[in-house]
Amino acid sequence: MAGGGFAGSGGGTEFEAKITPIVIISCIMAATGGLMFGYDVGVSGGVTSMTPFLDKFFPAVAERTKDPKLNSNYCKYDNEGLQLFTSSLYLAGLTATFFASYTTRKLGRKLTMLIAGVFFIAGVVLNAAAQDLAMLIIGRILLGCGVGFANQAVPLFLSEIAPTRIRGGLNILFQLNVTLGILFANLVNYGTAKIKGGWGWRVSLGLAGIPAGLLTIGALMVVDTPNSLIERGHLDEGKAVLKRIRGTDNVDPEFHELVEASRVAKLVKHPFRNLLMRRNRPQLIIAVALQIFQQFTGINAIMFYAPVLFDTVGFGSDAALYSAVITGAVNVLSTAVSIYSVDRVGRRVLLLQAGVQMFLSQVVIAVVLGIKVKDHSQDLSHGYAIFVVILICLFVSAFAWSWGPLGWLIPSETFPLETRSAGQSVTVCVNLLFTFVIAQAFLSMLCHFKFGIFFFFSGWVLVMSLFVLLLVPETKNVPIEEMTERVWKQHWLWKRFMDDHYADPVKNGHGKGFDPHSQL
Image 1: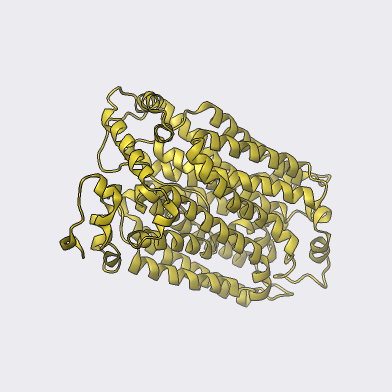
Image 2: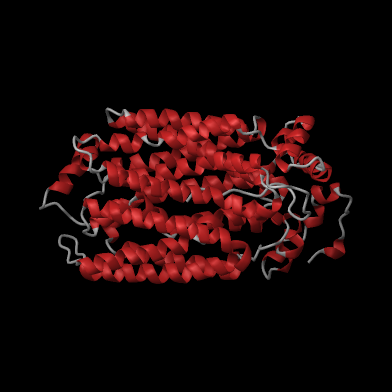
């Protein structure tokens, strides 16, 4: 899932900071960007299994679901247009991220969140009032632009405004809101599917206006982050905001570090080119790999299409939406587990434990469906149906306390300051690109692979668990500026990439010269 974010400056020194009401309110308001994204992800799967919606926009699919002779369990929803309805949002988000990277830097986090809110509202209006497929797709594209801007600005905002000691928890707040948005969408779909008269889908798409409105109002109310104000040269305003959000006048040490961090970041004229330097390669490889693997767990396939998936394996439309609500609730609760455990047991333990749980549950799902659900007949008794839902819940819970939030948290805490914004852009882009690929291909893959789709994803889970075991170091409780010494230089493989670290302009800025004897 696209979500998460990255840590602000510093990380080693504990500055004086109270957890002030303004910080809590700002974070709750900003995190509604996650709520909006989650709602958009969750709502599309439910709406596309509603018969009136299919009748209006996708009559070919509607015919296929009604015709008993054509009613192939795995292929009835295989339609390019239907997949485009879901995936156009991610392609638009991917494009918008490039513009959002610029506005976040030049106009600030607050204004970028406001732009996201406006895009969301426009998209919601077009979707709820859609008369034809073009109007529907344009609405989804506008929502996607909102996602691109929100996913760039909100995580940055959260990590910069939060005091160091609660930054990890507040970062995962964004991911928690994504899961709450999905659950809210599933509950809404469950209710609107029962509306007589065939306009329930309009209510489902229209209710996205609630989180869209909250984000827009929130963006108007919150202050911009001190980091952003200082970065844009508003030093006095930045210091005043810092005093407000930290609840103390003793902000000079943190203020000076922010000013220094901003000065150092400005030395780097080409952050994207810098990202490709040898010493930044381990962080880049891990960030990109985590985003690709996050999609290839199969989570988005299950979350987007949960109602369609359950309907396909023979639950019937109503029971399918009900099952999707259950998985949505499991997702929320398990993300809360992650907030509690991530700084206690560490990143690697969560990722490896979840890898085992996800692998086993997917293999068993594939076996059950392979034996019980044939293409044109299905023999999935009530007991087996419940068993499949339990297995999917086990899979979702493992994902939600591991790859969900950590796929975002780990890149956010490993990129050095001078490449952090470029790193965030790459992370978001790769995530949205592969989300688009999976969303566009999933229903066709389901049609061709049948139950084997779960074997396909379980194979990837095995690959990513080996990747974590061998190549992802533990970053728990390591201050950001000490990552190189304490993490990368201690790793059996990545230490080979750190040999030119002292040629780094940032280190030179702190007066540390190049020492050939320090090379590893």
